[in-house]
Image 1 (cartoon, rainbow, N blue to C red):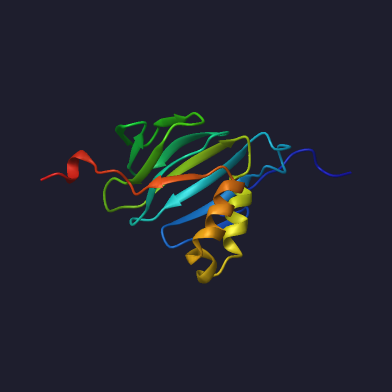
Image 2 (cartoon, rainbow, N blue to C red):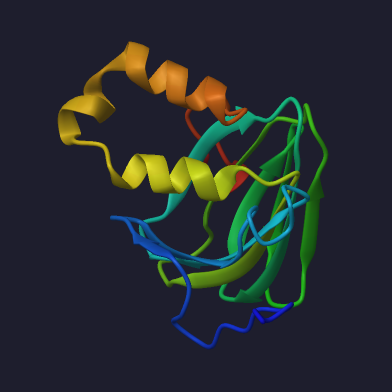
Length: 158
């Protein structure tokens, strides 16, 4: 008889070590029949994610370590340990490391799907990433609507 639960320790689970972050899938969409995905994201000091939205899924972020500047629907927020940020479907958002040190957060995607996006990206080549038409199809398949770079932050203005 198979187990009716799953347990993963530190550093366990499917993981994707990118240039700017290292993400671990802790609870996959397969584990939840598509209800949600839970991931641990270890943001490297160079991390920044451009403005985008999701039309059909929500994201919730719980910050464990470090500080992240989070742009949501026109407002900037500094998010540190213990902060929760919930972004409903349709709300534009972006984020970046607040200071030049790594950060860590848990992410819940509801319904699931982002784990599939990362798995697909991991199989792509540099040529695939450079192919705008291919990237547009991948983004559309996973409800990612790119909207531009990280917006200007008030602290950047001199």
